[in-house]
Image 1 (tube, rainbow, N blue to C red):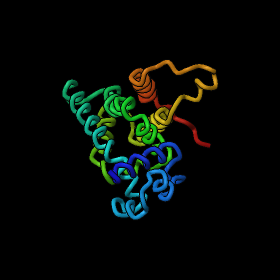
Image 2: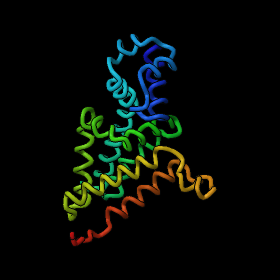
Image 3: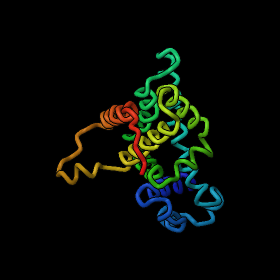
Length: 204
């Protein structure tokens, strides 16, 4: 179908080049459709980006919410920060083998600042749910500090999602972890960061 060709091509180009660097005309040329078809189905590049994300991210977010619900039930109401991180991170890596281009795109959108708009416009309930879960898992941490640590988490996740780790390339080594092992290692690393003591810095 023409609509699917447009979505598949846009997903690939957005992931490889970034959203700003990809024009509708390039998408049209590579999908071998006419510009009128893009305007008919999507009206704008922003709406096309939303459609690309929604067709797969909606399922990822349903899995995130289901995992978080399960972990909270198992914990009797308040999941640990490790479990909250696992619920947020693991579903993304679960689709990496089937949709590597989409996972790469998610990393790029986080890094380029597009994901917040998409989450606020289409998945505000997911965002609110995880903010509250992080707060419940770390009740002794002030909101300002907690929000910074969530921000660091999103940055680390985005960097890891975007592709092969540069440090391995620089070291002349081939990455040896499976996607599941990377996911678990990232959860463990970030959980340690969340649990790190808050140091009071004297501002000059």
